[in-house]
Length: 258
Image (cartoon, rainbow, N blue to C red; front, side, top):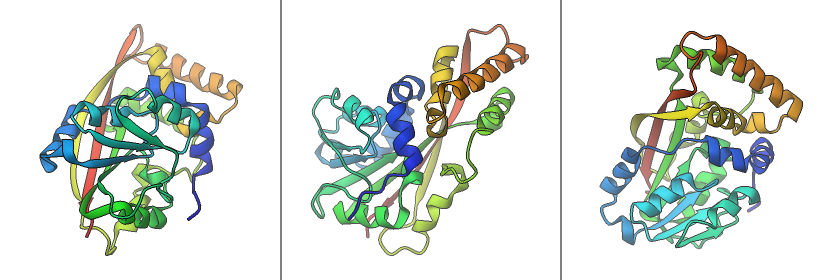
């Protein structure tokens, strides 16, 4: 099976691995608690963190006691970050071409990435490597704009640069591949709120870590950041502040291989 990497993701994340690591928030501990609760023997489970990026979620799995973790990531600059995580295997691969044998994995986690996949091919490949009754967890960490007026307005500034056909969790198009499928059970779902306390520099890194922003040329990036900076300096909720509390909502979907 051929590798599939969405071009915006491939280019954007290749250029933006450093800012991704600095700007993206961690996942709340409640996510790991959920995975541990649904897998009491986590330390004995064979786990694949698919499209692992710089390893933000991979590190949490290891810290929770997982001992048999493989991180799979197609983007070289991100994969280099994974090598610093102790006691894991790191492989070059995609969701559509997982370099593992059939029925060899207990758990597959996908953090912040499933919307980029070629849905049908990815689901079939995840099914192939999972053992019977193996579990698939999909996670997304999203800014909770609905609870924060200044964040809503800032997001509007950023989204002016987003292409109309840009893959995104919020469109829920990624979910269609699971409808009426015979490979996996229906989803269970939980969501967890948490905050990220950031300086302006970290906030800028978070903005620049978005794939559709990281592929812009330097001039356009500076135009965007200056516009955001001017907004923050004028907004009543953010002006004269040196740190900002950014609310997030983490969405977790999980299902079981049939």
